[in-house]
Image 1 (spheres, rainbow, N blue to C red):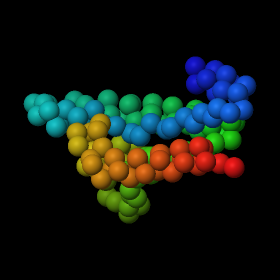
Image 2: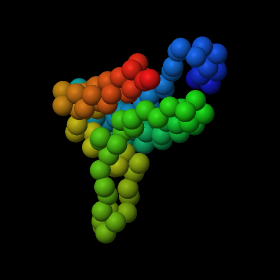
Image 3: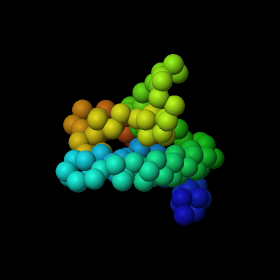
Length: 131
């Protein structure tokens, strides 16, 4: 469906579409914020969800490259470096992200929302006021 949208819009030179990538979210942190009695059961679901989001974002990136638009990558703002010398050998894909920057694992904190809004605003300005 995303490919179809991009193709339809290409027929209208005055119209421009940009697909935004989906920032990773956390089922674990969502349930933790809701005081779920057994949050450990959500760790594997978290990993599966983030892998699906990364796969979706890869497809979105491909489509954006085809239509020659380059939106900001929102996940960069919550990612953090992992120490290669860590003794923990059980790294999960979710360990790449700082979900503490969200209110509840899904909704960004006020500061993170402002950062994302500023990035999206700059993108919109670039599209609307290009010469």
